[in-house]
Image (cartoon, rainbow, N blue to C red; front, side, top):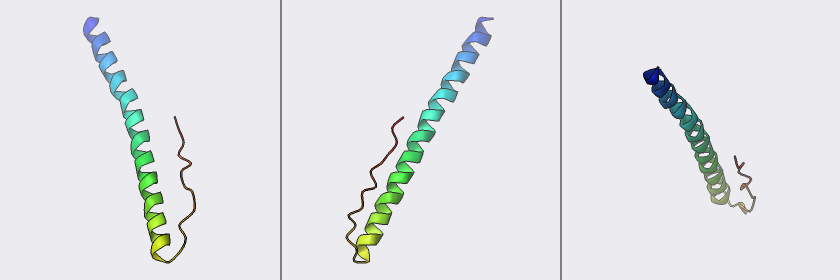
Length: 58
């Protein structure tokens, strides 16, 4: 009984932490893409003044 409870707790902890990790990776990738887009616009002679900082907060 105790072994099953401990294994269940470990499994649930792993599942919940992976959700937060996946959300963080998604945010990082989105910010990286936005920065690349800003650099491309500036490289083409654009103003690059658009604001892309609307990052969702969970």
